[in-house]
Image (tube, rainbow, N blue to C red; front, side, top):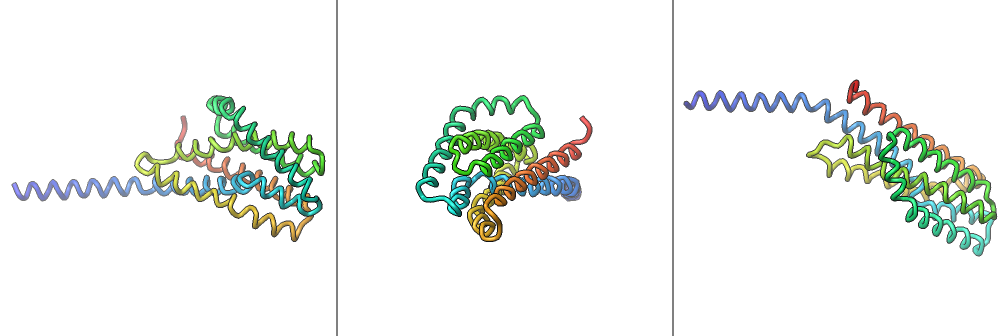
Length: 220
């Protein structure tokens, strides 16, 4: 009986070790996906998380306090209204499109909005239209970020994956510093070009992550 029990214990331990060994490559691949998506979230956060602070810094280059205050107030109000009025409808629409399509459209919204900002100067209507379109890009990006993490997270490690994803919000935290540095080196219009480039790279990294997810999932 004792010999049989020891053999069973050894067999069980060997089986557990085998399963752990077999699951390790998959866990490593999932973690690499988490790193890729977190890098993309970092870039997205850099573009839209601190937009009011970023734009106010850009406007300080050649605008007085009065016009800066008016523009920032309009942008914040437009963003808030757009989110309140369209977030639910866009969320329902996202259920019918692929992640790839969603990120492409979200990126387009960010880029068009940033381009309009770069051309707006003191045109308040152009600032409002740019913010309206930019907000659509932001509304699309936010739920998709959580959706892709939810897709790759193992059931027993969901808390860790979503916690790790929050590191991407550091992109928004460093935006004011990076914007300040860029404004000392570049004309103000070029700062918008940098933000547009960051949006494009963000989309490319997301698309890379989605491609890796499909490859790991295999055909079908």
